[in-house]
Amino acid sequence: MKVHKVTAAAAAALALSLTAAGCGDNNDDAGSSGKKITVGIKFDQPGIGLKTPDGTYTGFDVDVATYVAKALGHKPGDIVFKEAKSADRETLLQRGDVDFIAASYSITPARAEKVDFAGPYLLAHQDVLIRADDDSIKQPADLNSKKLCSVTGSTSAQNVKTKIAPDAQLQQYGGYSECLTGLENKVVDALTTDDSILAGYASQAQFKGKFKLGGFKLSNENYGIGVQKGSALKGQINTALEKMVSDGSWDAAVKKNFGPANYQNEPAPKIGVTVS
Image (tube, rainbow, N blue to C red; front, side, top):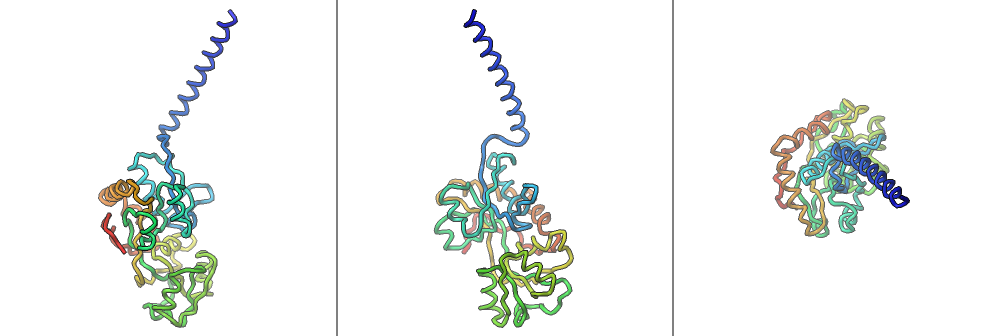
């Protein structure tokens, strides 16, 4: 009889655990397949990749990454977003800390020696952001004698200073948000980096109508999705990106994230074409 009581108790416990597991499975069906995927994005670039105060993620790269992850068999609840700062991207991939990276990641020969790239999925250009009522900067040469802002160590700012407007007064701040504040308050005259990033900042509610892009196209920046060298994900992601373009999701994501800044985006680039 004693053995029978233990067995009954065990059976009851087993039934309870199965019931609980069943509830968990239902929740997974709603937003997760159980197959986790870790994706590197920017956390501090509005319109590109931004972690909001409530812990959600927004931006063009986030939308692209979510679409790609779904095509790879993952539901939104499966995605673990990890911050991928510019200096850390190759290391994150090489160590296997992330499955892929979509973080305003320009494809360059030096980077392509360390990681593989799917894409490109966006052609951006270095540009400048100026005040909407400023008509004194109509061409790149007009930046001479102007106060030009970018972040400390930015190659964009140095490119303008050395190649385009050598007499520009370069002001380097710790972050783009500081440059925006300076631009709004007329402490600086222009902010330079990729036009996609500039459009993302200008699209924020508090800045709508205050700034405009110069439209100068000072460089070509082909954004790719980084994966480990030799990874089969490269081909799978390219297939997903091609579908994103063909079904209209790419255009919708551009309009959603950059539209408020009147960003004149390039058409979707040819997926899988080698760029340098």
